[in-house]
Length: 478
Image 1 (tube, rainbow, N blue to C red):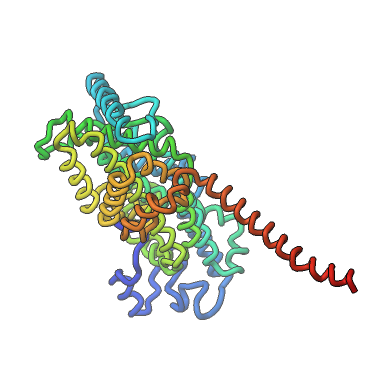
Image 2: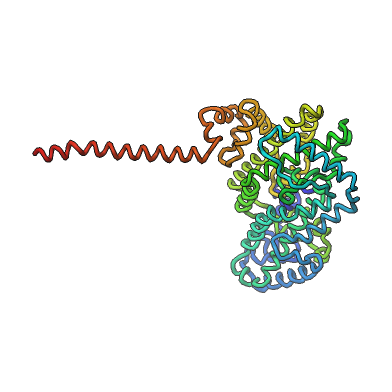
């Protein structure tokens, strides 16, 4: 899987690009694009906009897109071609063995046991109404709708930036072909997403393994093949590993089912990131150089072409702020799950602490969560933040109890922020100190504040009246 988001790459890290820029050669391009200021091959270059040359470029571009035919399919209308994404993912998955009835029964039994033990470790009730065992293909099919919600805002912004990069006269001249530009972007994103999902589907162990609720609401899903591979070499009983993974899935389901704002908040942060994307149009020219139109009929060839980097977004302060919020929120989710699962299983399964540490290291060495978010938005989940989030929830549980810990999720404003992860003691003091009422009942605290302000206003009004009375009396006496 690419380490950069959807073919994103850093122009400063591309030696070939530096070499081309140093030579000043525009190169041959089926789009008719050369490097900025490169002269004859660039319709937008130093000589100004050339309508005749741009018309030739559009003709070549149309011929190239005509070869995409079957590769486009019916999924080419939106910002991401999900038909290509699905096809590429299935190709990478290959053949799969259906989950046996015995394995499915074992998954359900492990989940029931995990739910029973979790009841004593958290005040949040069970969130899953059913438990299923998925193959990688079933994971792909059941999570694609959520991936659309995550990817569409980013793809729409990138595609829009591509079109905005054209001169105004060029945009007017292109007219009906603007849809083709959008289709090209849809293929680019679909190809990258398909490769990412194909690899993820064989690595994830549950529907929430990357921290987000990707599957249908109320459905706890485990992938037995990945769990078995995870357990190889751990020297832990396979049944205990299955119960441990089932408990993590059940804990995620409890959190996302009974904290109604959480899912939407995470998706909103991704949308905030998308709105901050800014493009460097020279990357499009780099992609166009030497492109063979016949390759566009083969999705796998498209993916190979895109490895060189289709887009180069420039990081903005807005993006950095959104990424920090997303990282913090996911760290809080994972830290809470780890704390609850250890409390629920620690006395029953001796290997739980070691398994939790193994998962942490899995993230640190490039597990599915880190790879997915690096591909999606350029975000790498830092194990340090996950470790600190778990330490915060642990300290809060010890000092204030599970009830106070779980009530923090009642409102987003009550959650710890990034600075609290670095100083958990101060956050715990706020919960168990003078600010306890805020965590017990935020609405009651708001009402109390409004009543206090009203009382102060009434008191000020009374003081004004008292000040006026002597003046009135003196007037009457005179």
